[in-house]
Length: 340
Image 1 (cartoon, rainbow, N blue to C red):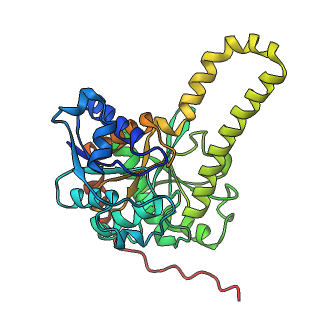
Image 2: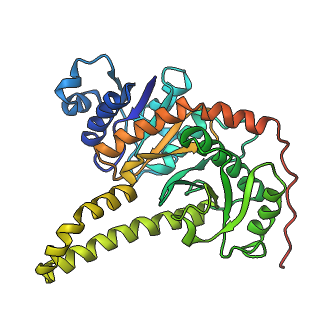
């Protein structure tokens, strides 16, 4: 298996990306193609991988930065993420990984790989570490304004991903809403409730934001606006809690004594909630595998993103989604109430 990695994307590129991709190659027993400036990649490539046939370099002369507009995917044709997507399109790699500009990564992956027939918009599927196992939430930011049909398609794709990658049989699917009752939520969510209830999915109804980490459902469906806000709130909360504990220890040094006994628990908790543990999120709905990582990804996160790419490829996620939607006729657009 071969994974193409955008070596120039992310806040800590290329050093952390190169190191993490090389580690991922070794840990996951896969070949990695590092795409980007050849000189910079060679400079940061650990010596043990320099002569390895499992880690190769594909030179790309341009970089799409975090500040670039999404249109850069059309003007910078030799950018590292564009070349990585082209490698997958040509069948030279089984998946791509980028922790660079998220909007640009989504755009180039969609343009180069194309959407699965029957899928209108691809979705970012993030993994939430629940107390009894993972929960898949999608969309996490690709589609801010969703139709009922978009949410139905997200539910199908999330169910496939949960089953194929996390081995969850007959995944429980829920809608993210402002209440558990079917009457709660905006017009789109209420209409989607009816559509999902009539589907063959294991739809269990609505869940609230407080259920994201409680394993009430295996797959939680939301529009990209609500999903991304929920994700960023969770990340910010973890940073806040760590900061509060750190500040409190500086004011009350004696508090370190009891915390010494709790340190192993805190380390396990932090590891469980750390985005680096999952590495990246798949952009589902494409004719190819694209893993989108956090811009602040370190080497460990990149290594785990390589693992996520391998898992999606091994689980035949793309072909299963394709088969799942092939036999399902698209729903007629749901006529929402006119409030004007």
